[in-house]
Image 1: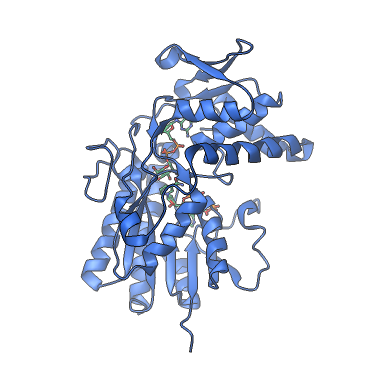
Image 2: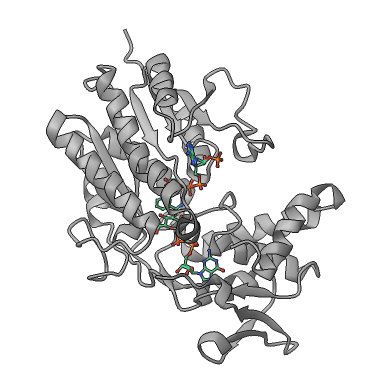
Length: 365
Ligand code: NAP
Ligand code: GDD
């Protein structure tokens, strides 16, 4: 009989969850995802998958052990991808306890459910870990041996997740591993992460629907990849012979300022940056208009400013190509998507338009 291929994705409604669900369906898996009750049913990223015969949704919350045990007992997955998290670093300063409950204890709940249900031999577990663990970085670039120095409530919670996965692997011989993923973006990225905020603003400014873009630290450096390429790695990590942790990154670093420059260039606006710190401005070279300004509203109490990953191990052991989509291609994909999205916006999408306005004014971070 053919080996069962049943995946459970927590956080299936998120950026990564939606791409991973598509990938696993293509690979012939039965895909189960967890969703949360919300007052508005907003499942835009997976709407195209709902109704497919091999795609199933279940209510569960990482803060609720019973729901986690219930769904794992029912589905008996052969692979769990634990992607669910409060994933916004700045929000973790405002909701540190919730972030700890979901991003730290939530991981324990998944591991312990698998163990208590007697599924340790048949179920492999992927944990969505993060380059934020390197935080106030102790070396560049960062690899699997670089010491951690988490620098936000989010990163501290994720560090617990990383270590409890390692502990369950060693204590109970479970096949559970962490992917230490550097930032990955896409046209499905949440609108309050810096890349998407920039691509949406570039599109809105170009189309006369926004005047200015306010950002925080323009000098912050990130290793940005394409989410669609990164979910493939999550799958490869669970197909590996041994359970191991991997750094997933492109190996190339850019600043927030550079991301801005390329995004505006794609819509036909050449920006020049003048000034320093809080006084720095991005100016339209053709008109002299100030389009980008710095607002302290978007500064963090502690900010991670130098992330740069070394994907050597993933290339060698998983055969993964970290440079399938270049930085410029990523920016162009996101900007082209947002140009079309903004052009299609009308009064019926008032809620989303309000979000843009709130983002611009710094009401939502
Ligand atoms: P995302 O778009 O914010 O998605 C997060 C998902 O988690 C959503 O489906 C969300 O559900 C769900 N979720 C939040 N709280 C939950 C709870 N209490 N119980 C159950 N589900 C909950 O994040 P992403 O960018 O796809 O990232 C996926 C994972 O990778 C996260 O764990 C993130 O921390 C980690 N990560 C991301 C990156 C990156 O650059 N994207 C890099 C490294 C690690 P709702 O839709 O209901 O809110
Ligand atoms: N969000 C945001 N908004 N960030 C800004 C802004 C702004 O207006 N201006 C500057 N930044 C800077 C932040 O201070 C940070 O240094 C950098 O841009 C990236 O911020 P985010 O896009 O919010 O992502 P992140 O790096 O904090 O976190 C993302 O990547 C992690 C992996 O390194 C999230 O996806 C995390 O879940 C993930 O673990």
